[in-house]
Length: 182
Image 1: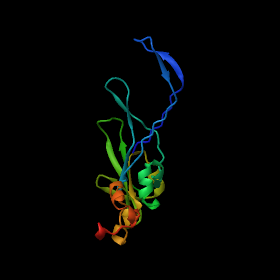
Image 2 (image 1 turned 120 degrees about the horizontal axis):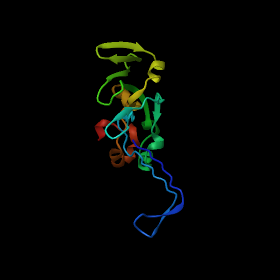
Image 3 (image 1 turned 90 degrees about the vertical axis):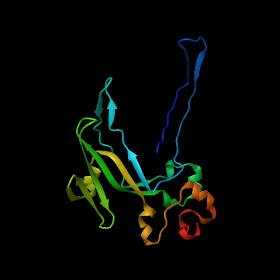
Image 4 (image 1 turned 180 degrees about the vertical axis):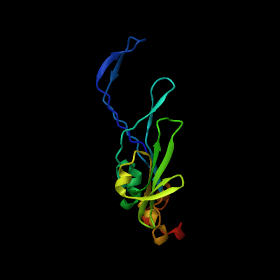
């Protein structure tokens, strides 16, 4: 998922190799998601170049939500063809990188056990139950969100269709379609 907004101010400049003026204007660019996955992975930029061949770790805490509504980031076609509850995602895992270097370090993860309703910290062969408060304090490197409706598949609900499927089955109103009818 990319949502990019940029603004360029008005003004004129001269090009280095041309006598023609460059005219700048205000502009905005935004990229939208057209098809929603069952599992959404958000990879946070945790390393930056510092010098010619050296990367350093970005250690700033990034807060993240337990529940993510993707509707504001979706294109119009998705908004028209899917039911509103198709846009809701629940946090299911958080991966962390421990260490300073890009090519070294150690990875651990917090994973949600949906059957038991609890969080587990996974560190090599050690598993420890933990609280949501601990998860939220993590320096996330990768966030995994599961589409809320797909979590209940075994209990009678059907996953939200992709945009292509929705366009083919517009009369079925998104997520309520029956698997046997497609």
